[in-house]
Length: 291
Length: 48
Ligand code: SF4
Ligand code: SF4
Ligand code: SF4
Image (cartoon, chains in turn green, red):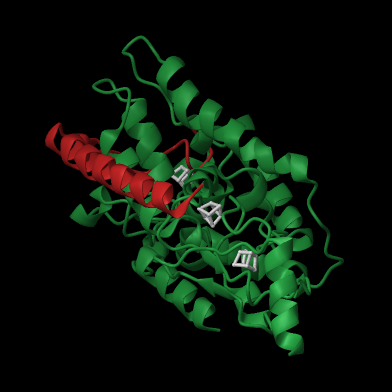
């Protein structure tokens, strides 16, 4: 419940300019030079900040620069502080996917191999193509936005095309491709929890790598854990928190901490260390308990 | 990764992040971001 409230507040501050939907305008104020921590399209009429992925590709593909120190610095800062807690608590498109997953249907598990796809998308579509596929002026296009991003289609494409006749007249094959990806994403999210986050989102890939060292992390007290497996079973991201508390897939949602009967898991305690029990430690603990 | 290594890595990356943000800001990247973000991005909406 606490997480949902934070997610709704984060959604609200990211998309505060709701009145813009009426005329199909987008917010043009100075705050748009700052990046949102999560995925939120800057072409959405309500968006108040820049999308970090869009901003990264814009600078990487610009005439002046081929690498954005500013956006990479912002992502490293969010990553080192929060890691994928950004996904679990602050990302507007993460919340949208969680809501879609509530639609009643059979729920499926994701094959592990698909988790690696997002790293490929990050390297090829966010870094390589905007820098290498340039026009005669040396400008590259934001390939992830152009060919993949369902957040752009949902938050920017649909409301803007709905309100602008002149834009509707230019719809072509690219829009059909992006609508198909959006529909597949929606169906995927109905069936599989956070389907897009886990398979395709380059931002999730970046924060996932940062999970290994982020200040906000998962703390497992091996002395308390009785290996009941409840934490693993409750995790919708299919993480085993006792075995891999720093997993790139953990969004720090806290569900495992809540369900643990031993109170052995904690989220966001930066300075405590995960304790691992050896077999001998466990025997000692059991002996003590028996006394 | 031990806790010490993690702490060290955190500090190094935090410093790198700050240096990157300051350097990127100083060389005018914010204006490129702003310019892109305040105009409708045709690629984002599926027309570009
Ligand atoms: S299309 Fe996607 S990646 Fe591009 S700016 Fe919009 S939300 Fe960000
Ligand atoms: S993986 Fe991407 S879309 Fe999902 S919550 Fe994280 S930043 Fe948002
Ligand atoms: S349930 Fe635990 S392991 Fe799974 S995503 Fe949430 S915090 Fe991470």
